[in-house]
Image 1 (cartoon, rainbow, N blue to C red):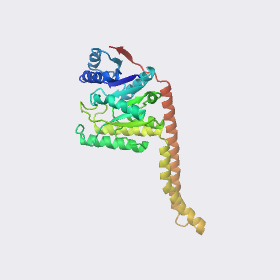
Image 2: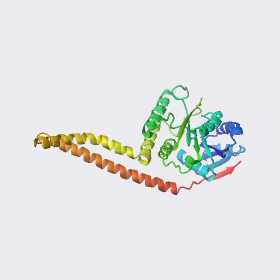
Image 3: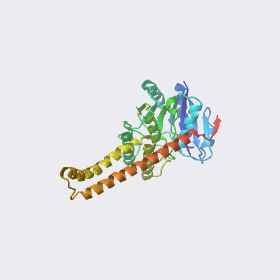
Image 4: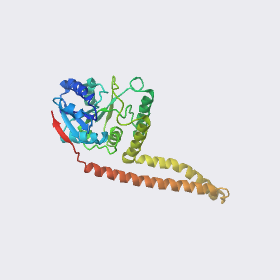
Length: 312
């Protein structure tokens, strides 16, 4: 069985050596390939990595973002036919000692994707505001997907070879939420592994403040609905259609029952306007969704990652 531990990395020269050292400790059990995907670090990260023995380094000269790093990981995993790919953030936030248990859990549950779940309700690692945002964001994702997901943005997760086969992240921010939508559409089994602990090492480099995080997350959530759950817009259409139909019915009820429409012309006009506008908006959304889906398919079919590889 081939296992890949993929470590997304950007400007982590202070932590990366300790992270790899911890991964090597657990690697005595699982015998995985440790591969660091450096996304154009501008500090001394690459120099530090070159000094570490028995790792694979995938690196680029410019920063492309976490989503592109994930696409490189998926491509590399498929090309080298790994049975399981474990993504482990470079900042040492997650407990390396639980990798073996998480892998055993994935096998026992026959899972396609396993999420390493952080407990936001009882931890003292993040601020109360950040904990609430994480809980609220995961609830929103769960509601749309119809699944129970406690930690939608965890950077400690496992993918089977089946899950990695045709996966792709199209946004420029993060792969975490969008890939859950893809997995849900493909009916992959998504499981959650409760982490005993997790740690804070530094502030996130994906966003500078909570407002930016909320904005980017909502953008990804909406785009993922366009790509993977466009039928949700049809349900909203029927909800908005109800008041329009009700107003129109006031006119037609009196007209057919009493042969009179006195006082109900306004209801007919407003109701017809609601129905027309709702229908036009739905058609517009369907067109946008179709364009986005076709563009995604083109991107996936033409995707060829550009990176350099180094074995130490």
